[in-house]
Image 1 (cartoon, rainbow, N blue to C red):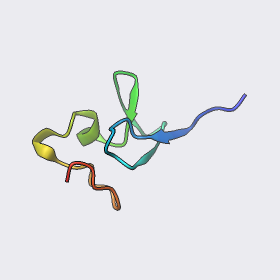
Image 2 (image 1 turned 90 degrees about the horizontal axis):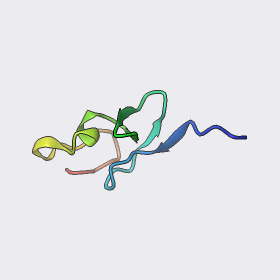
Image 3 (image 1 turned 180 degrees about the vertical axis):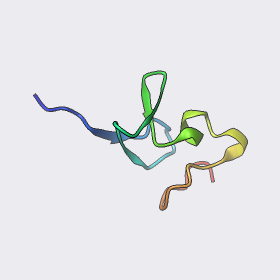
Length: 55
């Protein structure tokens, strides 16, 4: 059996791939950071290079 260690951030607009060991977990979903996990308060993006979610 193969173990999943990475997946796409659960934010639908985000392009980031997150390591599950580093992910921000919320409601059993993996996010790349607090901004995505918290629904982008004040429209803040995740801030990762190359990703323009909510910018």
